[in-house]
Image (tube, rainbow, N blue to C red; front, side, top):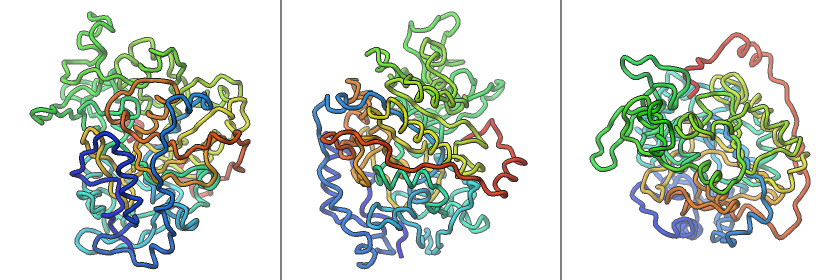
Length: 497
């Protein structure tokens, strides 16, 4: 029986990664004989034997020259879904494929000693609090035993964050995992819900915001969305004094970039202590590299949280989600795409939506790409913006800027150059996707987080010709119960967290 994981994590809370941190920790893991549960409920010899030698897949980080990605990859697609952890989504797949990857769906020892058996989840995603406070409580300083302190996940809720999906509930994602690459050491960059998750996906930092989802400001009428035009606020922490402010949920533009009469606070609706930070979109523009944000939900669109994107020329790069399919079919994909879900009740896999409906969307997108003119030069990173505060047994580590990472999330890498049925166990975060893009397009790093991030180099084999379609992806009908529920229930569009 395995519960909380102490050994085998991506680092400890006190670790201070410096130059070479990715290679160093990868080497440490390889020598440590990593296994989950060497806390109070330790893994047995049989447990470790059943997984095989994961250490053998954790070789030193490959370091290709700066141009190798660019010679083969012309299109990078970041496929961003909503709110799921690694064990909850791919844990059962890993166990059935043992020793393929490090997943777990067994008994969990909670803080205080209660042992709870993880159970299968329904197709309809259960609702669990996943605020900064909730995620910090679940992690419990790295002991990974605080799940009963998460809202919606105590005994009265039948511990519904201690649930998991079987491969037949996410058939397209697990089919892709079986034929391409699984990263079983990708962590969100912070213990934050969706707003923070979408900020650091673009900037490799939260700009000293906690990442909490924005709320209406006192005596100010909030508008739609979460970003600069929403007139909402969210916690911002002074990095020197550590004093907390409720600041506009907006990363301001550089002085002089916007009309100062129309935007006296550089895009924020009032004075803000936050400062401009560059985004991957700024870097792409500077190099004249094409990009698009495919999104139909203002809250998840990334662009509105950055004043230069919301109010400047970059806003024209924001297009409807469904346009991705026609762009792929007609040879119009940009060099860099961020594919965001279509909203609550749709394809996002956000509670209380259907996991299978979102999986059908994943299958449709990848099937379209595999048969598109641009397949032979494309790399797709399928992941989730945060954990949703669902269970995972691997303790997160620390980013190069000394901020704490969040809970481990699914990551499936799909490309004609991706290794077949490979598990990449090098420690990574969302900054690793940015690092891959930076190396592919010759862009400077945004922060120390992406500068020193592992770039998923081990996941690719550029020594062989690109493969054709590998996976048989299908559309699967939803159950009558799921269809009936979705037809009679709506999600509050003011809170698509």
